Length: 118
Image (tube, rainbow, N blue to C red; front, side, top):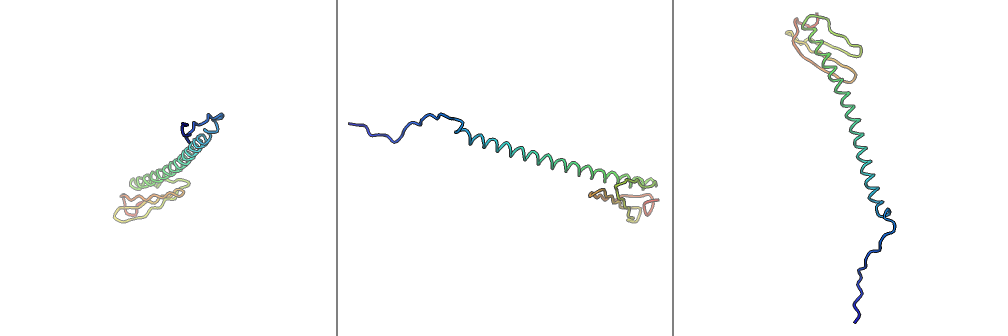
């Protein structure tokens, strides 16, 4: 008796293996490109945040220097690109508003005399 023929057959060896690996290579390159793009975006946003934090610190230091000058009875410090406003809150207290570029800082503290500045 003849054995029934099986529908399963052994795969034939491929002559060109690069054709089989091409989709994996393209997928790998796409993942690397995506990760490189994410890294670039993160670096740019970090640089912007660092610049903004520097401006915020600069406005805070100028407000502190202004309040200290008011407490010592000296003239307030000046900076070319800064706008400094002092507002009397009464009872030897003043509010210092400093604006540099788009950053704004308010600082409230005691002064040596009413009205703040000498």
